[in-house]
Image 1 (tube, rainbow, N blue to C red):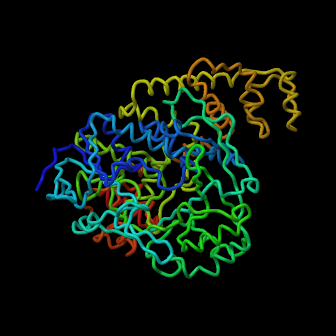
Image 2: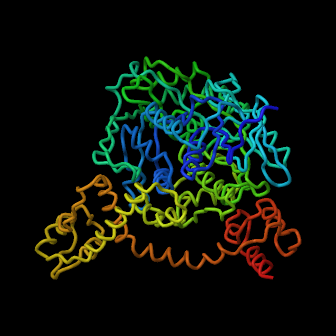
Image 3: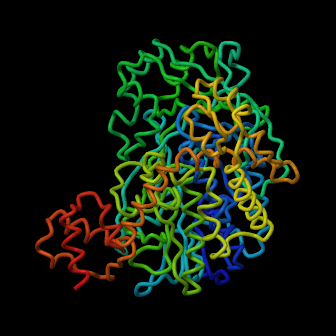
Length: 623
């Protein structure tokens, strides 16, 4: 058996999760190997040409504060920025960027190639070697063995991947790329439990075959905010996307051919994402809707390849073409690639600790779609957290975790390890009970101290964030400045607010429902144009207004958190025998024995666990 040089950490897979793990491990000078089936696919954007979105945008901002690469790559390759959810409160505003996939992937690949402590190995990991309860090595398809102290499996949709286009089936993890076989079987031999999920992608269209004059323009924001505090030179493009609605005829074509879709014929055993359904799912589940909106998004600058967001499908190719050509403006459209579904294995994430290390095997970490998630951002965040904790594992340091009140990343990981995974997990603002505290605009105040303590950031980036934090404090003091009625009353009357008769502070004025900070910012005399961080001025203004308008809600949530924090810190002994607690419900004993929560707080969030169960468990732990 050929043996490759020993490494501290081996990463299996070079997608978004694998890249983030490699990037942060390099930052820590950890000797790392990044193993991928295809070395030319590092950081590939296999689905939509966008980063961020509802709650996902907050995750990208958090990745930036935790030393990740995705935010920088996004700012470097962006074609358009758009702030989503602006019709709602600022606490759930979410940034999103259309990106040039080619530029994004090139940026990532070049970055990885220059990492001094990371070796890219083209090969396929097929099994792991475990001695006792510790990882020892990984085995490659060619018989090579890599000895390591930790391994991070980031296999994406490649674990026994099976692509479906109508009745046509292809063994692959992505179109044109081989599936990974052997890892699932290896892990199951050590007692791990796996499942099967499905995701999909829409067809790609030839741009020159679209009648663009029949489409509606979807422009980006004119004055956007970058994702990364490492981005100082910022002059992004603003390339328009387009929208169009499906037709009644399109609905009928799909309805008449539902049986040809693997999802409806029973060919696909995996469960698909409820919140990102295929066009077949939409037609079947929303029968009262005759039309559905589609977004036509360029995959790179001046691209002739268009991504049809909203038309994910596994219908036969000829049905896809027929349905698309029934839509206004797509009558003569040409397919560059059909949409398809991909079915793949995942490992039940309840087998993980909050550090993403497996509960039973020391040094073995899972990150990304192997944990049942979907989405670039969710995968990248897990890869980053797994990388940080792989470093902590080999250095015998305490694990790095984030609470549900600290980050969307904390919400996601806690959900994964405590809740049943019945479908691909996708992050939404509604999943976070403390979403008022988890604003995209306050990421720097939420995570900067933890980031500094864990030494996650380069000095230059840390200085940039410190500058933003200092500026935030400075601007906050300006809210106590008082304004005369003669200055502020014209503004108040213009938005149907009651006039004032005496001087009021900017803070008091800003609490008025119809008053925004943009209306009074000139009177704050803020000058944020002196350095490369001027692009974050709008973000700071949004945050100042949110802090004022949500002040009551913020204090209420902080009081609630302080009450329940005690449960979060009560550790449950490893190997605790739940079967001996007869006064807990049968379902409760089964769920607790299966998931093995690390703390009482985690136990409280397991579905099927009642308050009575928690009360009894608390007494038993105390004893």
